[in-house]
Length: 276
Ligand SMILES: NC(=O)c1ccc[n+]([C@@H]2O[C@H](COP(=O)([O-])OP(=O)(O)OC[C@H]3O[C@@H](n4cnc5c(N)ncnc54)[C@H](OP(=O)(O)O)[C@@H]3O)[C@@H](O)[C@H]2O)c1
Image (cartoon, rainbow, N blue to C red; front, side, top):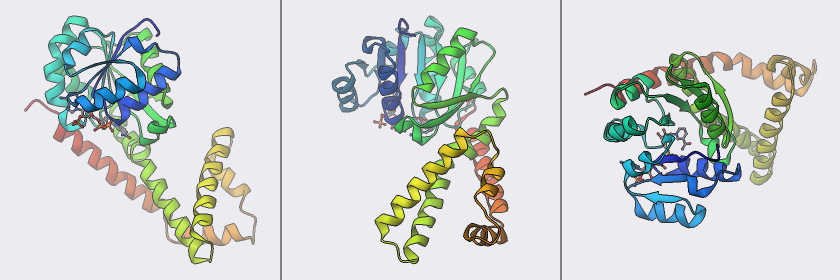
């Protein structure tokens, strides 16, 4: 990976996090280009990371074997269409991190048989703890697949999906997921405070408990139901709390919530995609 050039189109939060992760992984700074219309953003990136910067998307793309689309989804169509000649010229691997932008739309905006990896990262990527699903089209080679995976792995865990329509489910689960956990943690913090704990104590206990539970689950081969049962003694305190949550049909609530997010993901892909 050290001898390829990577160009970021868009130098916002996600690009910044990926650049930081790639440099930490040993990627040389002179191999990275960031294009963004905002000169202040570019100057800041250059001062911080000593990478190449440009306000010209085509200039960045023409130098690259990998082009990463890190612009907002609503700008994708315009920006990607304008990049098409440079992409057709250099034939780089195109990696999109733009939420909801379909491979079929990217391919038609770029025209030609472009190698495209569509990804769906989530916000914890900003602290290198993201969960990113990737989908490759049939023009992507094995080497390019590995490349895409190692780039996204710089900001967290990666996994592949074979069917692009599953990206809407990924969006509903891990894309929007950090907000669900923030809401649950907020509720726990408030409930702890209602029981008399100082706010800061309730906050710290909540966060460390969430972190510890996730770490335990990640390090265990047992399924989540088993882990839950193991910490739920008959007649104990946990059982009392879980009974209340189950009586309020928590699982059904999450089913409904994720279905709503899934529906919206499909709608947004329609709104941002297409050729009009
Ligand atoms: N942040 C996350 O946690 C997260 C998670 C999953 C997926 N994503 C996806 O990642 C993508 C980037 O998100 P982000 O949070 O990094 O957004 P962001 O901070 O707004 O970054 C986008 C950057 O693109 C720049 N830009 C605007 N027009 C451009 C153009 N014509 N050519 C090149 N660059 C242009 C923007 O400049 P201005 O600010 O001056 O307009 C901004 O610096 C989005 O598609 C988002 O869906 C983000």
